[in-house]
Amino acid sequence: MVWIVAPAQAHSIEIASDVGSILHTKPSNNNETQDNRQQLLSFVKEPEPATNLPDNYQSQIYSDTSLLTEPMTNVTSVSQLSDVQPTTDWAFQALQSLVERYGVVVGYPNGTFQGNRAITRYEFAAGLNATLNRVNELTALGLAAKVRREDLATLQKLQSEFAAELATLRSRTDGIEAATSELAANQFSTTTKLGGRLVFAVNGGSIVGDRENRSDPNVTVFSYGLLNFESSFTGEDLLFTQLTFGSGSEQDEATKVTPALLSFIDYSGVGTDVLFRRLYYNFPLSEDLAASVFLRANASDYVDFNSYANNSSADFSTSLFLYNILLMAGDITGSGAALTWNPNRGPLTLKAFYRVDAAAQPNSRTPDVDAEPDPSVTDEFFGDPTFTARDNRGGLFGDPNLAIFEAEFAPSKSFVFRAAYSLGTQEGDRYSVIAGNFEFAPFQGLALFGRFGHALDYTDVLEVGVTDNDAQPTYWMAGIAFPDLFMEGAMAGVAVGQPFIEDSVGDVTQFNIEAFYRFPLSDRITLTPLVQVITNPGNSSNNGTLYTGTLRLFFTF
Image 1: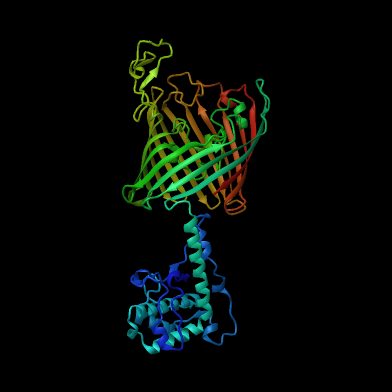
Image 2 (image 1 turned 180 degrees about the vertical axis):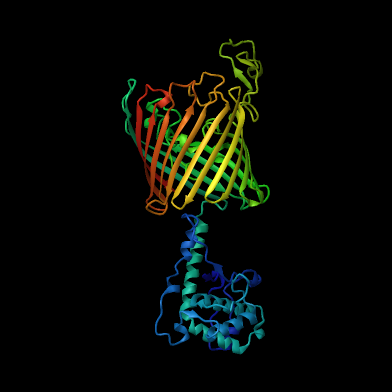
C-alpha cells in the first residue's frame, strides 16, 4: 500500500535550525482567506491497476514502486532502514507522537497512524510530510504557540534523516500535478469520453461441389469502424452515442456469393458514409433496478448475452453465432425501452425489452400499390387513395414491434442460464419465440456455451423463403471456448449450428461451422484468423459446400 501526499501543500515548509523562522513561514497557497483545512488532501491512495489504457493512465503515474522494494545492506542508522519498525525505531515512535498530538490525518482507513505494523520509508515520509504541513497550517492560522519547541527539534531531525525520501515524494507529486493539469487541459470533454473500435479484414473462400454457375468469390479487403461517445451527468448514468462507418459493399464477404442463410460477417457490408448507429440513455431507478431509453439500439444490446459468443470484434464473426436470430426477429435496429432488475444483487436477473422498428413513421397505413392516385385530393396524408385504411403500422406502438422477457440465473461465476420469450407483430402477423442460452466453465481454460430458439408464431421477417403460414422454425448453436489459450488474453473457439430448421424451406438443413483464435498483439490490438464452413447453403442439397477464411485485425482506443 503506497500513500502519496497531495501536491497542493508538498512544498509548504522546511524545518530550519532557527525556530523563529519556522514559526513565521507561510503556506504556499496565496489565498490566505480560505480555510487551508478545506484544501488539505494529505494522502492519495494508489489506485488499483486498470484493464485498459484510458482508465489506467493515472495508475501508470503512480505505479513506480521500484524505490519501495530496492534491497538495502549494511544497515547502520535509521536512514538506511528498508522499513521503519513500530516498536524499535525512534523515528516511528516520534512521528506517531506528533501525529496524535497535532491531529494529523495520514490517510489510513481508520484515520490514525497505525502502530502495529512496519511501514516503508516512503510511507513514513508521506506521514512526515503531512505532519510538516499540519505544523505549517497551525502557524498560518496564528496558532504558533500550540507548537512545542521540542517538537520542532524532532521534526528537524526527522526531516534530515528522511531528506532523500521527502525529495523523491515531492518530485513525484510534482509529476502528478503536471500530468493532471495536462489531462484537464487536453481532455475531450468534462462529461464525455471518446472511444472506438476499428476492424481491418481480409476474406476469401471457395465453393466445393455443385456451384450452380457460381465461381469462387474474390479475395476481398474491408474495414469497419465505430466511434463511441460515453457521457455521464451523475456518475451513475450513461448517455451512449455511436457512429459507424466502413469501406465495404454488400459483397465484401465470400458468403454473399452463395444463398447461405444468416451467415454474413457481422462487420462487413458497411459503406463509407458515417451513419448514426446507436443512441441510448441508461439510468438507475433504485439500487437493483435500472432503465434504458433508446432511439437507436438493438435487442442484442440488452438481452441474450453470452460471454463466449457475443462480440464480432472479440470472438465469432457471423450473425448465426453472435445472437439468437429467431428470438430477436432479425435484431433490427429500432427505438424503445428496457428494464433490468437484479433483486438484492442476487443470482437472478429479470429483463424486459420493447422495440418498435418504425417509431418515426407518422403514417399508420399501408401503401396500396394497385390504387390509382386521385388528383382532386389535396390532403395527401389523410386522403390519398394509394393508402388503404388504417392498420396500426409504424409509430411507437405500431407494427412491426417486439417485446422480449428474459430471466437470467447465475448461481456462480462458472454457470449462467438464460430463458427468454419474445412476442409482437411483424408484417401484420403475430410473432412469438421461446429461447434459451447457457454458458458453463467447468474449470479454468475451458467453457461450453449454446443457444436455442423455437418460433411458435412466425412470419418471414428473416426473408428465407418461408411459404407456409403455419411454419414454426427452430434455430440452435453450440460451441466450446478455450480462454487464455497459450497466453493471457488469447482465446480459441469452435461452434456449430443450424440457423433455420423448417420443412417448408429447402430439402435439407444448412449446417455451419466456425472456428477462430484471437491473438493479442497488445492491450489494444488483436489479430484473429477464423475459418467458416457451410454445408447445404440455403437449405438446398444442390448447393456445394462453402469454405471461407478471414483474417481480422482489431484496434480499440
